Picture 1 (tube, rainbow, N blue to C red):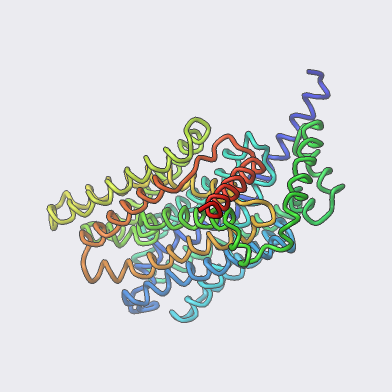
Picture 2 (picture 1 turned 90 degrees about the vertical axis):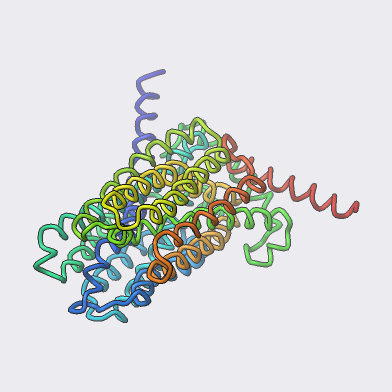
Length: 475
């Protein structure tokens, strides 16, 4: 290879790395804003602050999740119309305004409003960033690039847990309003995301879908080897011609069998990730550890272990995606999480009131998160980014991630109410039962997508739909 060719290879790899790092600050904000409530809530709930009950705790936590559900479905459509890059840039501004509003909120009702706005940004980022990365990445690097966003999400949660522990253990006892400092830190990555997206190019796939073929080729040449850029543009154009029968992606397209199957699978993948109960630990980990016997300060420190294992496990998950199929990885992860949840339920009953219980619960939440973040979450976001064809990708991800966030909303809203009403043991037994249902769904319906290009996946689903339709006609 000539020196010039080597230099060009370095340039496109550097460009891809820059795009990945900058855009995944959306994931970092996603993680921090969902994780910070874990440590902020005990201080926020105090009588001299927002005076929250289990019901209003559920509203404060889940208002972000309801906003995220709406943000995910509208975010997909907006990014289809105006571009992935432009909409991520706008999200950065919304993250900044909403984070400031939450930090300054004088009452629970104002907090709920700004948490809802923050949720719109989180939901939009949950759709746009994985789709943007999937469309920017070469087929052989798609898994590692898309899952970088998941890594940034768990890194954001770890950052939130560390900040919560430091602030809570240094100034928390003397300053009940410490939760405001915890929340305002989220403005910093929002500023980085906004300035960073100013220098990132638009998705070549989106440009091609708008007829901007020259711009698409220019971007592809920045992020691909020269000969590969031409080949990929031909693939994209061929794919666009094949999709020309679908003029506009709407819910009416669900009448097409292969489209309906993709959406059904997408919804299932999203709901499966949430009914493991992962976000009961990420949002209410401090309360869970307090309920098991830790003090508030000890619980804040214990949550750092949950954050650390999430980051480490995500690194392992990214590595595994290159070695193992999506389907067996997801099933293994679900078996691990379901077992951990059942054990939390059992030991919470058997060791109730003992000094050992908080350490057992913390150990089991760490094991749970090792399986969740090392297998389930990376596969979830990767599969959601790769199963939808181009003209349906924004709408398809919007609908499925909307369902994901609504499942998340239900977990976030009902968990403190359940914990107060039936206790730790029964609450986790409920999640274990849902885990068994999730394993059954994946085993029966989920196809393998590893090693297939976005275009090959679309052809696979189209062929399946044609066979199903012919079978129905023959019957």
